[in-house]
Image: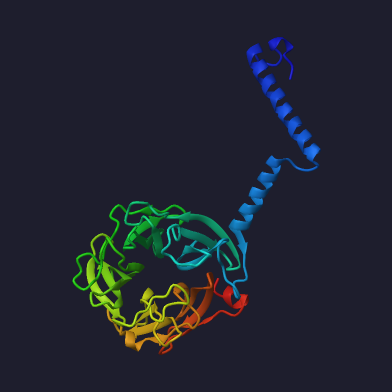
Length: 374
């Protein structure tokens, strides 16, 4: 760059001096970096940090996993209850992201957002930014749990659990058009247990109202969730709506034992709540998938069959998927489904056939079998 009397360059003298100064400064900084790098015999600290940040970003965002043996889990955490959605040839998973240590959801700082990952082949996964972070001081101020997603055209509606500082649980809705940006509804929370004659629920103490499952059937929305009766039984309850705005309590649809529960900090509860329910219908039959630890039985995944959506007898439950926990439907093919669960913090896949008198699921045993569902 030359001054050239300010004419040939097209610059006045002041602009020329400004650019000259910037060029000189850039040259000095570059020379200084090179000198420091040469003195150290390697790259500069700036280049080191930039390269390391890029490596860490790829390591976190781009995961290639052994989906058959270990499944998918995010770096630094474990997957718990999750939701499934499909968009542009990819399967998206929104999950409780649980810390590796201890694993309880009740400690502050645990389970404060939903992790989000997607895959086109179940082997290579892309981890996206988390969604729906907690909002301190509100009904969802401490934890968010157990999302469920219903697709209606190009819109996705998520039902999810929010937990306040007293561990009182409630249910809210959010929506998205691209699965990346989610907007909470102004009408949150739904509060399906509030003022219900049958339910034990409160805002100022621990109370169950969690694990929503939202479906659409015959022009109405049916939302099932985990609750407790005033008699002390864990149950799956239902509320229904014609428009997702006004809700009508349907009461418990499946009631567990009223006694025998035993809490343990380690090793699992000998008997626990009815949780993570999934309601679906096939060929006029209704199925309720539910996770429940029952005393003297190691199974935790159950299926109950009924001829209607609002009444299931817990005593008629049958084992559904040995070794699994909560179960979600990933894809359907005729009367078969690709299902998913989480095992040791990783998402794993299985298949089931709903035509059987008592359907059961099994784990997928090869990537070729899994690829057949793409």
